[in-house]
Length: 457
Image 1 (cartoon, rainbow, N blue to C red):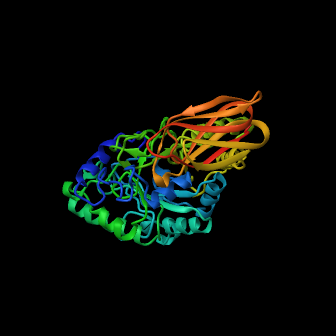
Image 2: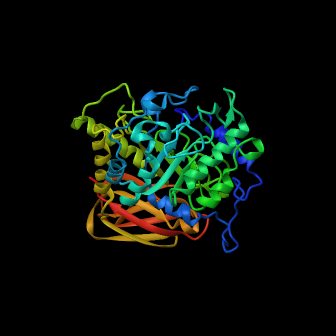
Image 3: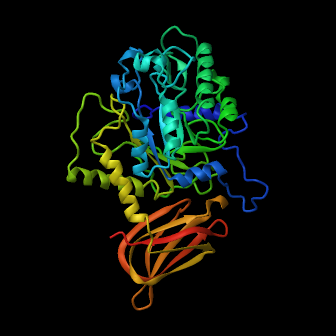
């Protein structure tokens, strides 16, 4: 992933156009025959992915040693030497954060391959590290299974310094041939996707150039080896989309349906189910996507921890609370470990999410335009979570949440437009005996999976 993702939209648009004749081309899906209301609905794979809500992005590559995200000349492989590499430690941090899936950068723009590969000679197999027998992907998958976190893999097809490839996947320098790269890329992805077991997510970053435009045929390989993976930035049936920024948030309202690739916030009248994923870096100046090799940091004091936690919770409200998944980055350092100076931030974040939303004051579910929730006894609340049963599509178009306050009067607490998988809203702490959700506009009969209120304090 380059820092600005300046080529992302262009490449994804090329990918979509070039795959117009494929089974799963962008925007070609339509509701099934049993879908009488005509609303787009998620595939079971998208539905499960949206339930995960939070994932950890793990950036570790030869970039960690060079500091160059998109070099034009490959670095000496033997600078890669993570003497303490321990993927269990990575997943322990992810678990503490509350991540339910993780995406490891298996092949970035450098072209360096993090598994035992015969696609071309530039990767861990060519290093002195572990006598050339190391396999970070294999270790990562094993650790995901150990900690019950669903694995995902990033492997860009659009940039590869060893081959002289740059966005959107065409040789821009050197004397290698495009046809040779296509074969190597297809072999690389076949190795990656066939030797790791089922993946929850495949991350392309920058799209995929179609075979008609001189790119690799990755659709058939993916359908053969990873038919159930959701796909970011590339072709596939179970797509997820970029939020339009690298800040770990998406603006509200955010819909799960889109019309085209640049619908970062989605559209209520979109015909394709393609939920948003908000990728973001750890705040507080600690790192970029890869650990900054020229900086050292001390373990954060209480003031620093609090400022980072506040920023992380803001991301959470503006991603998970806006009907999107949050994919938060963690960058191991040159030793191969997530640095101890940043581990407390992930731990604090996971604890705070649980403190605020682990136990509700009261909750219910139901169908229809009005849903009431009675508290066991009158009490103060300051947050509400609303979740639609999105297996039936997104139906809410506008709503209000009211509280029955002292004096037996209904008072508006908050309102909104989209709900989707999850909407989290905070409001002034108010004493109520009941809460009422009123859907004032909908596209079909409303199905609420969860209406829950909280006293966060």
